[in-house]
Image (cartoon, rainbow, N blue to C red; front, side):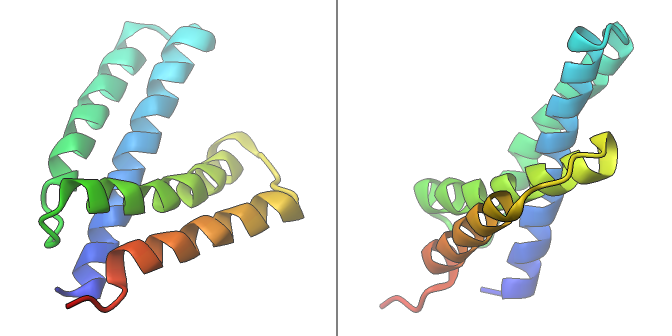
Amino acid sequence: MSVARSAALFALAALLEIGGAWLVWQGVREHKGWAWIGAGVIALGLYGFVATLQPQGDFARVLAAYGGVFVAGSLLWGMAADGYRPDRWDVLGALVCLTGMALIMYAPRR
């Protein structure tokens, strides 16, 4: 398994899922309309497809590991899109999640 390919797929999945959810949020909560909601739904659907491209074949492992990427990516998205400033506990929590992701996905196994 190529760790670089897997990490790139996780990053793309996070961009699509977090971005899609943000677009739906903007469409509904910020009253930006159906076009934003529709774009978000499409992005969320593409996220589901991208997740299937992971070289690892175990659904549970891939989705569990992706959770760590989602946590860290959500904080980064909030910083870029909404001006959110994470505190040290947010950063520490994201690092713990990414460590868990790396263990779940890339630890040597038989």
